[in-house]
Picture 1: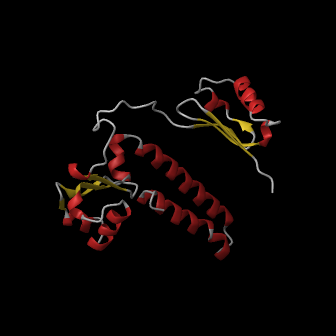
Picture 2: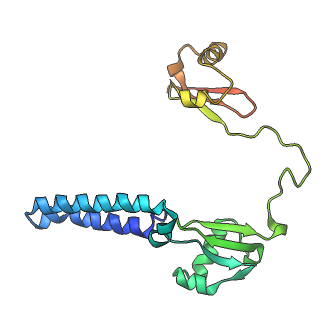
Picture 3: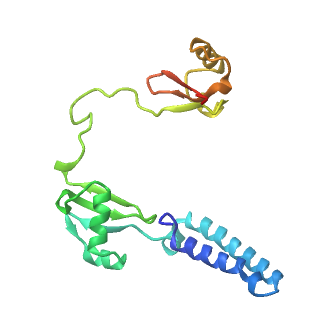
Length: 196
């Protein structure tokens, strides 16, 4: 629910209200017409949000709740958020002290983005002057015995390479694999189904 915009939430409430109309009345045609109109308006509004001219009308804008380490009480009040609720959101993000926060922004989707003061920022590889390894993500190339071609194409391996790896792991059939992954270092990891 927190991921929905106000317009989407209103649309869902109205849609469910219209959908329940046949229970109280006998006018099924009016109900169906109303559902089509609401659906059409939701689709149009979803497209209009993508146009910058209309996005500020149909969608909330980010609210800066902490700026330069100081709480913006006007913004909290505008967002109908108590100080206690705000401090709870900070704790959920791992910040137990407001003095650790330089900026906090309430995003349109309800998430809280927190930018800590420099002394509380996590250490990065760049901070330590170390060389970073391979960047990327682990790709799932087999899920529940099915090869995911789209992910396999993003690796240096082919289907034949996967089948050879299966043989080397004494796995008879690809359907015996729950998950097959290609890690960022190029390793192929296969997890076999365990039957109980």
